[in-house]
Length: 99
Image (cartoon, rainbow, N blue to C red; front, side, top):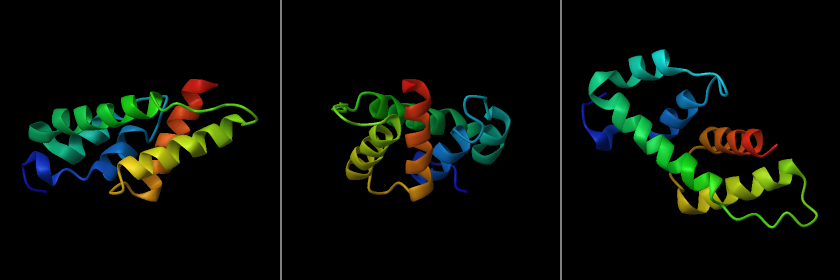
């Protein structure tokens, strides 16, 4: 991996960051990105996760799982570069915090 912020695979960053959520995965995350990029990658992930938590969901008639699907859809529209696995991780993160 090259040492530039542009080289960060944001999908991989999200997957690693949330791998053991609600537990932490800092050691693997930091090892993967290295000392030069780990804090930048973490900030990018936090920005996306913070946005996911601000998605307005009309809960009328929706289950928690369906609300998570709405969030995944919105995040896919806003970040088409995200992998299906990263979007699933975001959905799980959202539903965990909303339950």
